[in-house]
Amino acid sequence: MNKSTDISDPLLETAGEATGIRDFLVSPGREILQNLLVAYLPKQRWFGAKSRTIKGVDVLDAAELSDDAALVFLQLTYDDDSTNVYHLPLAISGGEEAASVRSANPAGIVGAVTTPKGPAIVHDGVGREDVRQAILSLIAGNGELRTQRGVLHGHSSSAFATIRGDGPLPGRTGSAEQSNTSILFGGKLIMKLFRRLQPGENPDTEIGRFLTEVAHFARIAPFLGDITLNADSGDATTVAMLQGLVANDGDGWQWTLNTLSAYYERVATIPPPKSSGAAAGFLAEEETLDPDAGIAGPYLAAAALLGQRTAEMHLALATPTDGPAFVAEPFTGDDLIADASRIETQLSLSLEGLQRGLAQLSGSAAEDAAVVLKRSDDLFSRARAIASARPADFGQRTRIHGDYHLGQVLVSGGDYTILDFEGEPARSLAARRAKQSPLKDVAGMLRSFGYAAYAGLNAFALARPEEAKSLEPWARLWQNAVSAEYLRAYRKSIAAGIPRLIPQPAQAEMLLNAYLLEKALYELLYELDNRPAWIRIPLSGILTLLR
Image 1 (cartoon, one colour):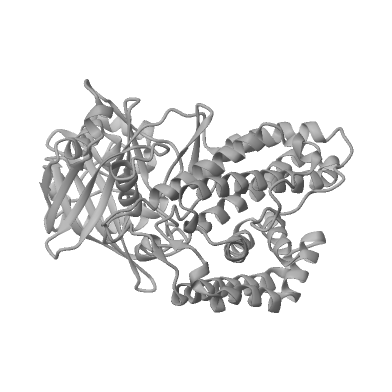
Image 2 (tube, one colour; image 1 turned 90 degrees about the horizontal axis):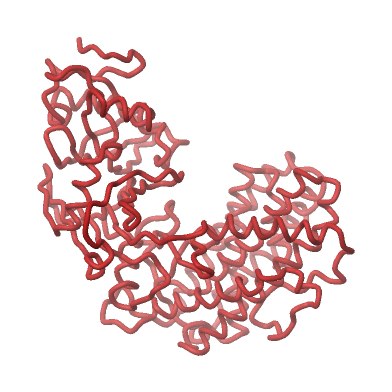
């Protein structure tokens, strides 16, 4: 039996001492590794199916980086017989390297093993510098690396050499909780290692390349390269993406909450506003800002700038091209029917969840929930309305961001950098690559403003609960004012660029409201399952649309 200096680590046993990583990619070591991974994977922060039970793990493919490191591709089978494919770099480390891994990321250790050099551990390879540099070199050198069943191809973009510059770039893993793993190289580069893989090009890579090399859109982290796995069967899958690292002051969500903290401090000492204003929309007059809204201060200008940058992103994604994946297309009747059907499905799921969860609600949340349930017929009518509309009036369908909110923008030097074009991770790759109305992104950001207003109020209430209820009109005023400024600037920039990209006001209002409803319904179901105390936020959004 192999021995370890740390009895807390599971043991990886082979027929004798492990001479290299290959011992765990072929029998009998592979079977031992696969069994340990059943328990190991759900504990990783990037694993996206923690609520599911893994029935088995199979090593599908692997590429050896060195004698003691490899990129390994795993097929996971769940208890319902569905499957996912995951990417796991693996390395064998002993001595000081093993001690460093234990200190930095003990959860990344798969097991202990003995080697000809003594006790060692098998662990997530991104914790080792030579592995990080080997992956980067694959992109930098446009290299190829043979796997057991295909080839890994590295590609560097036209912007790579300029941004990479000269000299060494030491790597380190990022600390953010996310579904992928970030590796930072010096102060210049950031690599996203995709953990859950789906056949095809990842939208983040595809859109990043288009915006950098075709549209020359400057308000993103520049695309510098990628790694694809080309299987012998012909399928190509994105494994990693490299971007330029953008200096920043944090993401838009946290920056907004910081701003709201100061806002609530100001308004807590003054009488409530005469009006909370009207919800932002395409049918509102251009100059409808309530006099009281000025107290939102500099955030109004910040919201307007974000609206401008959002429009510029959409205009860039509509850049004329011969590439079929990015050619703008007119709406068809089938497109509108598909949108309506998707929203109806979300509505049914969310109302069923609300009905089941009604007993756990109390106070104003229970009252709001009862109104929403009572108005279900009206909600279904609103969801179906776009299905019978004239498609020629609904603008164009293009590639969009797909998961757009304040957390997807960085505040940088008084401006914004837009991140993460991967789309909603839970959706299929085909759904995330589908062309949609740019107004779907607009709806996402408007809902994010609403969430920020009430998340900021909730945070304020923890310290001063006696004042929180009286501040709700100020929360609504802030949301309405910044949303109106955002939408005003967005419309102005689109009108100056490609007016036909979005519908005329009446149709734009109908489509935007449909997407706002869909987003709020998704939020409602999420909060029921995860944060019932926050359910008033999506309920408020739904009730606003019903008014």
